[in-house]
Length: 592
Image 1 (tube, rainbow, N blue to C red):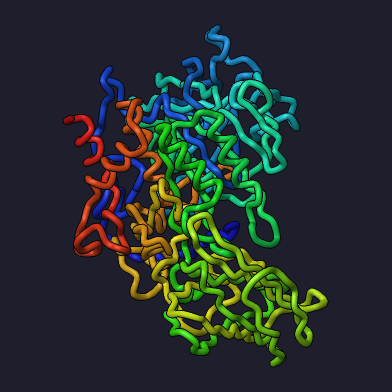
Image 2: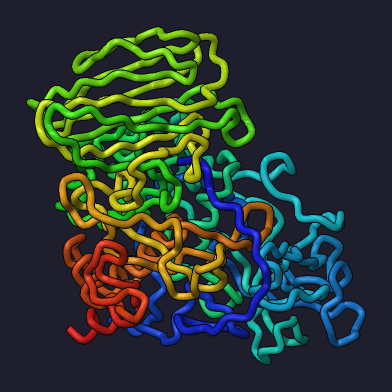
């Protein structure tokens, strides 16, 4: 779905218990221990390529360039023995002089973490900010084609640098050297309209990440530079390829899903991350074309990972067991507005597993008019001031879906109560999903009857081969009753309609840290934040042993997952096999 969390934090102290911490705050992407590959190199995901179906990425963010440029001295122009931005210089031509086009300045990174990542100084901080060569001395970093740069220019703009902070004072000291950033960590981007941008050809033209989702996902996986930034990704030397999602107004919201998966498959990615969750008008049984394609990729060795969805507490799932020839009514209440726009469409599906059972339905509209009964086929029924779309479909796995679309006849509001009347010819378990034009995890249309969260893991994590990732809270709870270390209130739980365990593993997902477009660090939450932690772990495993298969990586991650007082005995329907433990997974692989 295209709706993502906006987190407002009230500052309270919490105890760290997991991964690397700073002043009681958990940095979930930095391991406590160093691990090395068979050649003695620190595991950083080097050589691993990750495909992400997402909103895009800010290709100009300094966290997404390798530190593979030259090493330079800097010149203390005013001899004050400290770095003076806009005065001091970087000796690019190595002539020992501060030339007019060698001025050294820095990007003061924006902090949207409420200071949780640590104190933000008004002066340059080596583990937070980025130096750059202000070549024209205009006091801002120029970049992109708008400022005259092209694909062949390192960092697609005025050159970025990181500091070899030898004295560990988090500043730039006389005698310390600068390493230039150079090559993008992004190999390619398939834009929303199908245009493919490639590193070395036209990646500089890549469309922006306007939804601000793919950028923080990438930050958790590959952002920054190992041992340099206060926050960097789990696998900062990995590379990524993006397939950008174009959401439509009505379901299926991502209509070219197979094209996006096929693109990433053909790019020969080692890991496929699906950063989308759908439930409206989906069979939820793993039978779709793209789920079959992901099964094929998994058999070929690609590791498939996705976020289990954020539907908890949303009242968009209902379940009921109906008796033969008895009448039942299920009610949806819809608001006038959906995420600031007119709510002029509700999309509902009722699923069951007996194809021969043609259940009878009718719908009562908010003005009290009742449609004729229907049990098969596709049609549009007008009732009072409203119209009801319906369509009965059967999946390749035998799941039956009755689709409903509820609309006002003149595209007006669908405000009010909608009643679905049901009579089944035999006993049946019914599963009902609903949503609306908001495409929101919280929704503006909700069930009033038989509401449950059990079984709310979203497509495509319903696929047989997807490692489905739930989220737990690591820094700050959102609602009263939430606890640090406990499952996030919204995280998907339960079993799929086929009986498959919905969640395989959980990972840090609520109030994690990452980067955002426009030189920003921010807070990122949701199963969308949890899944890239598992991707980062898989990347480290693959660097150590590139021959690992999807099944082998899955088994390592699940067998080393942590259980505690929150998870209880695992596996279970809320936590899967427990909490991701990257260190334990690496130790198991290395010891074998």
